[in-house]
Length: 220
Image (cartoon, rainbow, N blue to C red; front, side, top):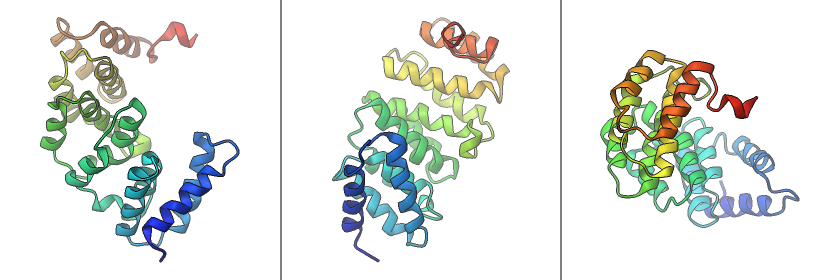
């Protein structure tokens, strides 16, 4: 097996060579490498992902390699998650981290509730958003989620009066994803915290409850 540094460099070179380096085409490269690395030890895949993240600025590609490898995800711990999440500074980076790595690891019991709650108490807006994004996995069937109102709402309560725009949007998303599984729990949450919730959250989540859409007029 080639050294992880070399593998990461090859993946980066293939992406750089794309005529149209958009998400679908980059994902095509990732899928091809997932096939090549299918029988590689999980530790190798983790190291390739670290190189992609730290050296080549392709964190989400590395997260997908881990997420879709037969056993690499099983090696992820809270310490690993925090290392991969270090330096998050954008909406896209946080959502890839939470949706592909930290959320799935939490659902598998490799992160603890306390770890995610600690992120929700962070001074860093991106870690607070990440805590909310992690709950989305529990409520998304394509990620293996079957609904988890207690865990979702526990994180939402920690951030209910946080009016940072990125956190507000994350809170709305977390609650809207829960609607499909437990609309009554979401209605109860909105009623309990009506006085402190941001207007965006109340509007979007109520729209979802009433119409199934976040912004029905925009969608029409």
